[in-house]
Image (cartoon, one colour):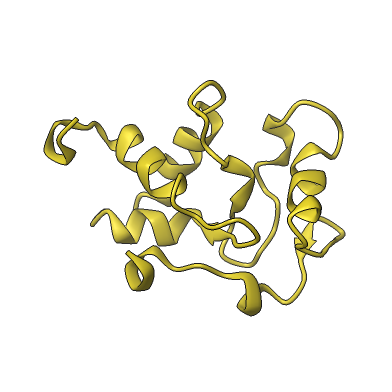
Length: 109
């Protein structure tokens, strides 16, 4: 599918699928990369609806590294468990050493 024919959610999914294993990015970073800097909340809505699309939504957090989307995952701590399985340390719903695991699509893509 050509990028210009994708809707906003599909564009979000295409970016999210490129987040490397062991890295995270923020809703705002994806929105900014897509030229919609004020649409971080829409990126969040897209992540919420990404369940059947093979999107690593657990790798998208808020700008401070908080697991704000965790209640959309099955199980009590699934988002945290997925991140920890990739070597990302999470304490009190917050990614530790965010700078070292942060992936910025505007710089990487």
